[in-house]
Every structure is written in structure tokens, then in C-alpha cells.
Image (cartoon, rainbow, N blue to C red; front, side):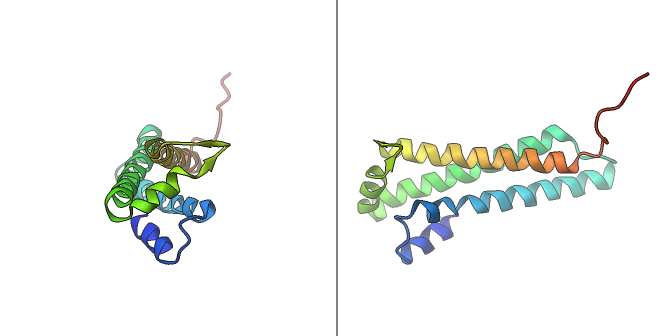
Length: 136
């Protein structure tokens, strides 16, 4: 995500919200890889991948990845490119201009949501229980 951020800055695309949103693709890829590793390690020992650890991995990968990314953006905008801090603060989000820390907090929340939802979807895909069982 940090490399993506640097590349879009070099290309001059940092003002586009759509291009900046593309960094969440890397969270999605990281969650897929992490849950795939969990599935392989559990399938080697057990028959079924546990559901809650898969959800936790998705949540934690999204949280940690986006927090590191937001911290890098903060350090970059404060020390390396102070003009970018002004660009972030002057973005118009739903008719309101937000302080820099709130913008970065929204990056963390969005990344966490992407990771958690990806984990949820993948764990549903790996569920082999066959659906609700009928009892007689």
C-alpha cells in the first residue's frame, strides 16, 4: 500500500479519490493470502478450518495494514510533503472538511471494514457444513 501511495504520488494521481481508494485492493489480497495459509495449515491437521480465527485474521490484517498505511501517510504529509497535508484537509467529504487525523482515521476504519468483510466472505466460502441440518 505504501509503494502504491508513492507510485500514485509520482504519477500525480494523489488528488483522485478513486485512485486512492484502490489501495484497499492490497488489504483484500493480504486477507485472501492469510486465510489461505490458515486453511492450508488447518486442513493438514484437521478436517475443517475454524470460523472465528478466520474472521479474526481478516479483521486484524485490515486493521494493522490500514493503520500502518495511515501512519505512513501522516508522517509523509507532516515531514516529507507538508503540502499534501493541506490537500487531505481540503478534501470535501460529504460536504464537510475534516481534520487530518479524522481523514486518516477514516482510512483505518475503511481498511478494517474491507479486511473484516473479506474475511467473512472467505470463511463463508470455506464453510463445508452443508447448511442447516434438519433434526427429527
